[in-house]
Length: 237
Image (cartoon, rainbow, N blue to C red; front, top):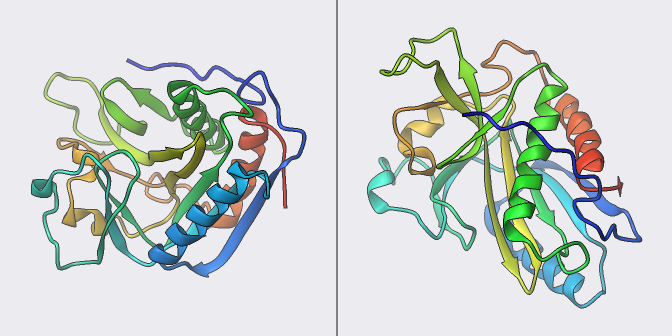
């Protein structure tokens, strides 16, 4: 079921001449402001007026609906604000303690390969988690990054229960990406009860702290940058 990480430095044959801009936003960023910023930055990248960018943010509690979202998977529409968004995928949650990394990269400069890009994003998350001795894995038919939970009752077929620790959803416009990844470091996991996360039932959600690891966002940001440079190329503040 599991698939190993295949390192692909620079993601692709064409490594950009300039390092990706790496920015960590303090505080909680309103979701609509984040979308507006990404739209502007993606246009500037396409016009060669800005560098590629990875933007790390936290959001106040909210739900987002991707292009494949099923309204039946929104279990409590009154709990938090719900935003329709152009990224791929279904319903997901964002909130304090979750590291959201918005990835604005130019695939024309790298490789016009959507599947390869998503795989690279998965590898990025899996490599960062490995810094804390957490084995993240991908699963066919279940988007995102998963961890086995041997401390929980097994699935009906006897295999270990699995919880989702990271979500991935991207959008491309003229081969510039935006949206990105969301990794649970220490969010309030009860907030997920208002949705069926990514339309996948029968499994749980977890975080690094839920797994018993005293990891802070600052700790994870360091691992995330190191992993990015290993998988996708150089980045600088």
